[in-house]
Image 1 (cartoon, rainbow, N blue to C red):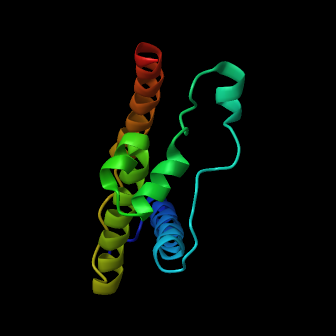
Image 2: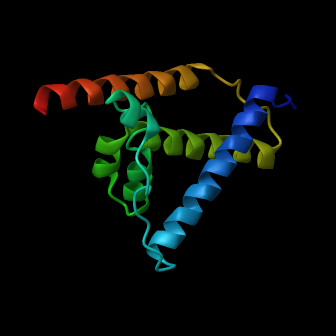
Length: 134
């Protein structure tokens, strides 16, 4: 059996953490009766520079995704949906490989690069669109 690479193992653990954390948020939001709201503080980067930081909108996107509002979550911060989707796919693939005791697929850094690109494109677009339409 082909051994799981160190990179794959790290991202498998990260996937589990993301999915457990997101699952807890979904349960709190939809079953536990706890109403989640946006962060009670202003972004320090936004306050200091007047520009959105790469993470601005992430909290709201997580809350909207937990409520099942995929489009709203995507508009607020597409990186959140990308991370949850990648974590889910990664978790499923590696869990199936562990159960079947078959070889593991090679970890591909392209998915990390795509995530960074999504993050940067949304950051630039958000700052440009706010300046144009404000």
